[in-house]
Image (cartoon, rainbow over all chains, first blue to last red; front, side):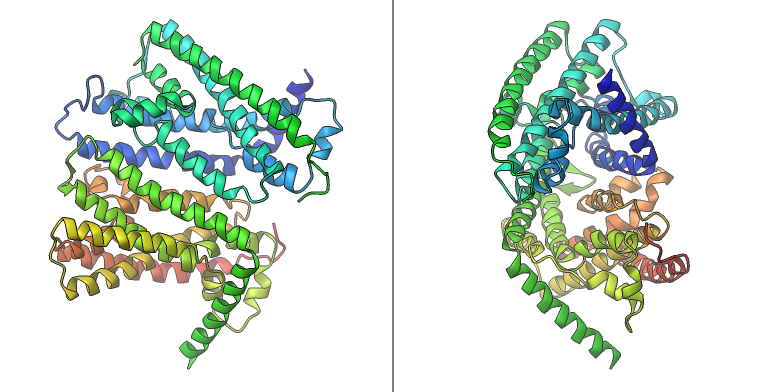
Length: 265
Length: 264
């Protein structure tokens, strides 16, 4: 209940800056749009590039990547590193009877919900205007499992980004590290292109790393590219990644908090 | 005489920025890492995208890599000279600091555009030039002095076009100072200059046509280098550069009438 209050309070703040959130959504939408235009040129003859990947699937894929990107990918790391740790504002969280992890999660959730809502509105408009170019799964069980995959993806992203933010306990200038991780994330999460179209060695690496389980798998699950056993397998791997990340987060938090001086860096 | 004064001021700003660079070396290394990483990412993405297709809209894989290298070359210059100033504009307007700039006996657009420099952008230019030379040598393209001069001149036109487009967009911050993330949007939109203009022509969507001038910015100089230039492209690029630049100047002066100096 108390976390719900935090969520609602932050909703007020987010709605105050709804135009800013809209701009962030458009930011996540531009690159997939350009890539859709690229593939339209590349697949002019209407052929499938690999079995199951026609222009319709690719358009649907990039469209959903924009939405899942807005909905699921957390951007809390800079806030944690710069505001809380480097400026010392973490102290005001430490004196409250809440878990820092959950507060940060609920602080960020309204941004994700609002941007995701912009995405869904865009999808609905696009679906009615250009329905032929969008193909989504219509199987209720697949959609339910896809929602589970999306939620797990959101938790993996939030835990990973919070852990990265906590590294500011040790690294004063963390900006370079963020940029490196951002590029790795974009390549291996399937933002540049679907994993199925990547060269095989890149695909293998992408399947080992956690990033594909944040964007690629939730997206292909909604398109209906995964069978039931594959959906279950993805959920299993996501649970393993989430468990591993929670352990790492706790270790980093426990070690980092001992270094925190509350006077900023 | 007036131009001389501006050059003198720019020289002073260059010196001040160099001093700042030596004072904040940690920030410099972080920015350098960022510049190299994003520069490399552009090549990685074009290599991945073309791993499944031989060509798009008549541009072969090697030509697309050359286009990316040309983009990287000029984009590095943009980062060096201009990019940081755009990030600063929202802060200047939001905190009511624009008063100090308007009070100076110089053109306010000049001071807003050239105050800060980012030397790490030059790493991207160096990376772009190395890849450009390598790709031109392996594709056996005959490059004459005229091609090189045309490439530089049209590239500078392209940069002026991008600069003008950015300046028009950030001028809206006079009315919406909190919308500082518009800069991120501009970075994303400008990414389209890495692709051939045909992706916009062929989309045949009027909503996207506002992006067409931007796609000419880097593709036209690259075509000059590859001996594929169509004079219509050059004419359009010059036309759009001229119009956008005039528009950016007019719009900035118009927007200043609405600046309240009360900060955000």
